[in-house]
Length: 82
Figure (spheres, rainbow, N blue to C red):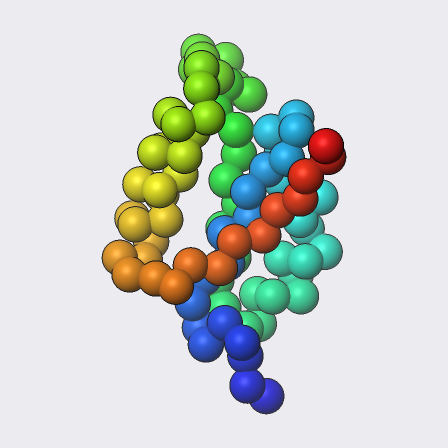
């Protein structure tokens, strides 16, 4: 079986509400093909403030991608609720 991901990780990015639990079925399907990471929103746990703007969120998530994989292409999963 040839994976379209070629062993590259897939980054699942939370939707509204900040959780990635809805990606569970997808992650279980993709794990045999490669690594799967879920990016939770900051501020869901005590002591951490949520991001104040989208640019801050994007910068932090970009750092997360680079910490796992230095060069693209990057495979992202997510959804929009509006």
